[in-house]
Image 1: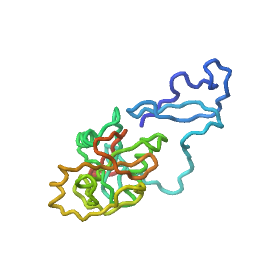
Image 2: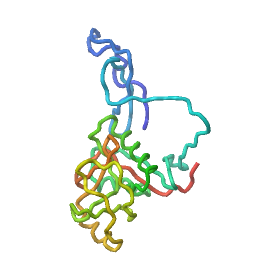
Image 3: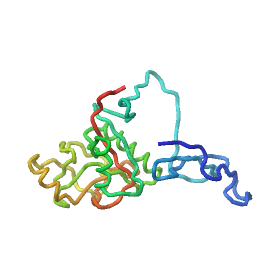
Length: 218
């Protein structure tokens, strides 16, 4: 994400265009454009917003876990990155973006991978809990309990599923995965609160989380 200090007409010092409103003595960061530009805005200190950013000293050696020239965070040999969709897009548009970066829509197989993907989705949401980022999980035949990942990997991890979502399982054979994927009508995404959510593949999300092999970790 690019950080450019102060949005248009900020800091204004007051919440009134005439300069006589409530004093704005605190500052927040907001997502200004769909391409990921964030800017500062002065706010009244008693104004309620969706989140806050903390900072503290790092004790001990810090391992960045950044993969080579891509600069993507990685864990267990896999690297992840969230790409905003310039206008909210469906799953097939999201898949195209990952493919352009020699990646696939992310599958998740551990708590470590879930932490990375959830953090990326929350970052893209910018405090909007209803915002979503596509991941590569599917249910076969539009409502079946059978689940599979778009990259062909097993469904072996399923924490943080929203209430009402279908249960996760991997009782579909590998021979059927390719066959049934052509008829898939259900997809999944991560909401702005870090939880997984069933989605219609033709619905719109603001971002996609991509995943690929990390070949040159730092």
